Length: 285
Image (tube, rainbow, N blue to C red; front, side, top):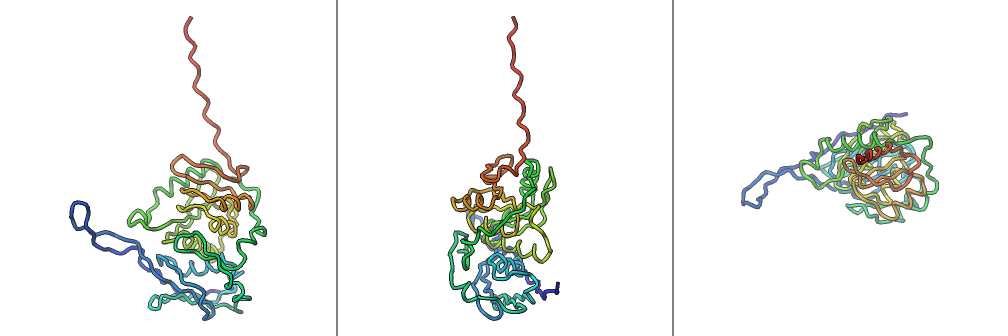
């Protein structure tokens, strides 16, 4: 595989401002960054993303991957981010086939930040096939939730962001492999998708965690990354539920501490055996 020419142009994730609290005291407060980043492919403008700017190169690659505008990482020659012009320029090896036709149809999604899906992505979900023969234990789910809770995040400092994690699934354990935060959850999942491509990471044995709700867009993107387990601390939408059923994804929502709701794909989930009821006390005779 040819080496991609990449900038490493991450922006600071937080900025310090002053605010007055309820007692009238002036306080220094960290707030999340937000920057417009216009994506160009072979000098053609695609769209502008509003982003934290923490992983702009991976975001651009993951966006193109999840929109199926680029089929293989080998098709990309360079990804160059320039914050002076708030742009990211992607150069491909042979151009993108049918780019005008694909970008002509746009579906505005429910993603915060007004996500956009190009082409017939929503209609082509029938072609997605998730790997079989894998399972998720309750112990691994709890291990992931514990590690997400303890993970140092921008959200704890400044709020106003969503986080997504790619995690291992090792029997009774789970470790966070990647963690990305952004002002929109769809940006965070795209950045992880891009980094997975760059690292050659397979999703078939992984868990995807998000702080955001499980919409159709989130389910489709996780399925395209071949990830069979999707977990959120939030809820889900009807279309997200229906698509998860269609692609046979194990989807878990409202997952915090030791609480969760298993919505789809129950055949892959291995819950611990319930504790036996306490012995009955027999009154003395």
